[in-house]
Image (tube, rainbow, N blue to C red):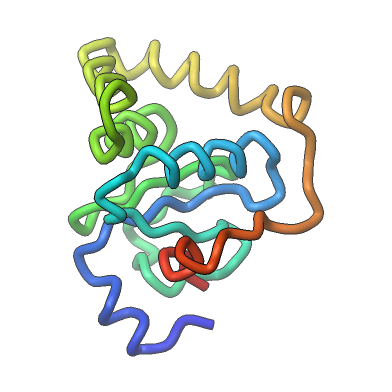
Length: 142
């Protein structure tokens, strides 16, 4: 449940919204948790209702993607742009992925959509969200 207190605490914080039923997405969140030594990223499953509570409707894409969104500095990013902006918050060498922003967006999103369409075939579907450690739990919203 998102409260006004939670909303205030999250102002200006980068938030990763991910598909909580996707094994590939959950593994990606685990990777980000491991390589975000600054501990400045927060996480919320798309199914948690946190996106609706934190991001105004006019800033959300329609239809809403079901894989990953990244909210930073008041702007919501989707698809490859979300992943590459998120990469800037990771430790070296993963932070270097952000250089792929030089590739045209249409091609990056084509590749992203291919991976997103096949992610359940690769990693399956989970009925429940991942269980973070007590230290990591403080960085999850909703």
